Image 1: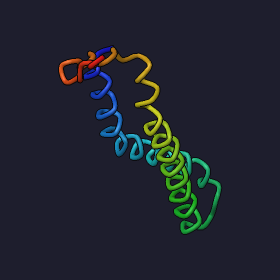
Image 2 (image 1 turned 45 degrees about the vertical axis):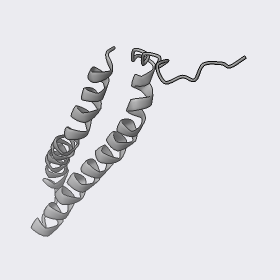
Image 3 (image 1 turned 30 degrees about the vertical axis):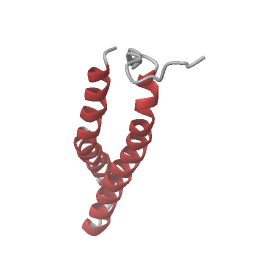
Image 4 (image 1 turned 180 degrees about the vertical axis):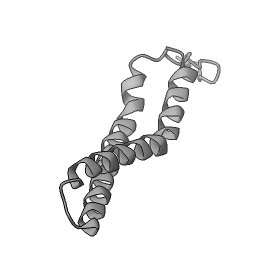
Length: 94
């Protein structure tokens, strides 16, 4: 894998973070609304929906950031090696 592709994957991954958190919170609000249908109080319904959205968004962010912090190390095994820079080497005087 070329180095530029590995760097691009890391950048795109970090740029996807807010989209992923937004999608997870939307899923959490939908799930919370399904759970809250059985409640009679509108305040309780709203609290359950907001709580589920918060929990889903926060959990997704936690997992994603942990994954993205380890991504460069995982990609480094697939990257091409850097060319050796022998131009600045000092010759052996022996």
